[in-house]
Amino acid sequence: MKVLSENGFSIHGFRVGESDSNYNYLVACEETGECVVIDPLDPVTVLKIIRKMDYRVKYVLNTHAHPDHIYGNNPITKVFLSSKILIHTSALDYVAPRSEGVEEGDKVDFGKQRIDVIHTPGHCPEHISFIIGDNIFLGDTAFVSGCGNVRFRGKAEDLYETFAFKLSCLPGRLRMFCGHDYAETNLKFTLKLNPENKDAKRKLKEIPEDKFPRSTLGEERTYNPFMRIDNPAVVDAIIEKDRSLENDPMAVFIKLRELRDRW
Ligand SMILES: [Zn+2]
Image 1 (tube, helix red, strand yellow):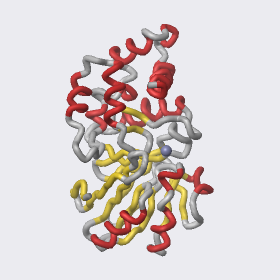
Image 2 (cartoon, protein in one colour):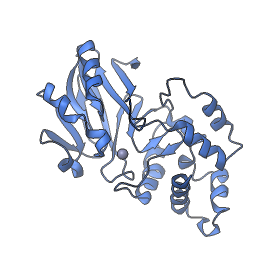
Image 3 (cartoon, rainbow, N blue to C red):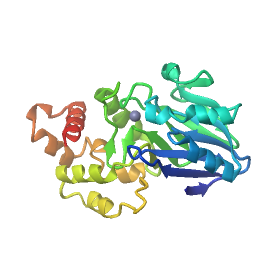
């Protein structure tokens, strides 16, 4: 499904069948046909889109090395022999030899387009996100009204720092492209915490039929509790359960993650 076209590139995305609501994306430069594939789990569908559109893959971008984000790497790089896998330098051992490490601040080109790499650890240490134009591909760092879990090599302290010092500094206009769709459960959790939040109520009502996780960082800042650790409504709901967390935003964030895990 083509999600959007702007400034000389197109984004395609689809929900992977029989998965944990995984989403696969590809972004192509319209002028040159060169494209990047992000976190492929279903290489067959990705390759079908590529053939239909007559694109050539330059890079497979991995936000992180969890199996459901790297599974389709090799089937794609085997078809496009000059393509490479890009992953954070610390996770090169998880992927095939034809790969290159990238880090915070790196810039990568495909066709006439540019990708900015930011390090967004927490869900796992190597997690990176990619900014292309007004779009951010967040993998499992942030979801609609939620954040990634920290169960598999993750650390809630790192995730707090990513939210507090990285995502909070990015422009609100950035459209979010997430690795999974958990919008309905996340918004119900948000409303349990903050029943009066009108933006969360509206977002829950507006979940699209195709479930495609559509949002922007600016929109998330109005209801996503993990992006509102400085908001009295969120803080009060958490410290009500444990007064010792008062004046400690990292502890509030960690408690919130625990509550969401148990919910
Ligand atoms: Zn993951």
